[in-house]
Amino acid sequence: TLNAVEMEERVRKIKEKMGEKLFIPGHHYQKDEVIQFADATGDSLQLAQVAAKNKQAEYIVFCGVHFMAETADILTGNHQKVILPDMRAGCSMADMADMAQVERAWPILQELFGDTILPLTYVNSTAAIKAFVGRNGGATVTSSNAEKMVAWALGQKERIFFLPDQHLGRNTAYKLGIALNEMAVWNPLTDSLEYEGDIKRIKVILWKGHCSVHENFQVKHIDYIRKTKPDMNIIVHPECSWEVVQKSDYAGSTKYIIEMIEKAPSGSKWAIGTEMNLVNRLIQQHPDKEIISLNPYMCPCLTMNRIDLPHLLWALESLEQGNIINPITVPVSIAEDAVQALKRMLALA
Ligand code: 13P
Ligand code: SF4
Image (cartoon, rainbow, N blue to C red; front, side):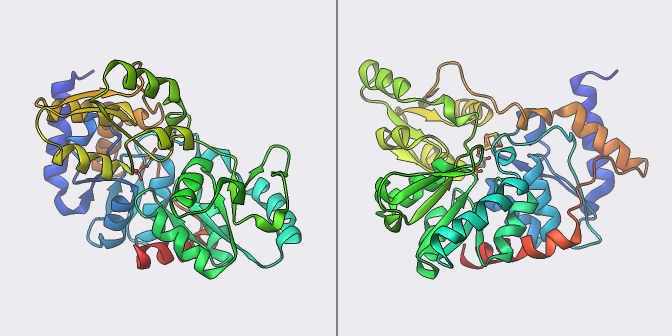
């Protein structure tokens, strides 16, 4: 077995040898040992955009989670193979909406509201959900463009059906001026709408899903910081709950969080509510600023962390030997509809 330095050396050699044939996108939540080899880093929108633009690479070794690799496969051409170094790199939020549940929900919602609903899905969803949305005239959204996309959708139809993250949906709609009592929650476990009052008032139907990492940033953490460090800025990802976002100073995508920390003055203090690898990287890159995690126990995304140096090396060594391990191939019938949802977003974003 190789040690870390030897593994890094091997990865570097294979990258050099494969040149332009190989492209490695890396999400901001990836480990340092992986991100150092990324040809492009970004939030999920930026990674979708680089995947769409990349025409020359034969192999895209995706360092991120399964839904991101599926998106890359949908947006790239047939000659390009997308590889996920560890198939266990899923996303707990994407897993909270499956097609069987959506197929039960949609007819019930149509019976209640007729043809007045446009579905939208956060990119953190399976290709099948994106295809459902695409077939029904809707679009995908990311945390960077959710406001623009929700505003667009509400210009098309009276109400939206937002999958699978209730928090991003609620935070975004609220920012656009929609009141909490104009939002209902669809519970996929009971196949029912959670709402009190006249359903005609509903403008936003939120799928009852969430991120198991961001739910660990809570109001009690904010209260503690306000009490002990009143001059600290609090910045969170919009996958945090509405209460947490309301009590924070700033909320936005991983790209937004990075930009805010980069332009913050020396000596400023920040508590960040997002995944641990990104928070740790920002701490290392900005020794002149005081940066901590909003939750003192830090919050790793265990599935993002499945992609590590040994798995990256394994994927690359297999390619070198002519084997494609863990190819991500979205069936054409799903990809055809899913691409409509992604294209509507990319055209507006
Ligand atoms: P971003 O779009 O902000 O990169 O977020 C993706 C994600 O999975 C956050 O949990
Ligand atoms: Fe999914 Fe949450 Fe991990 Fe992002 S942080 S990939 S939403 S589980």
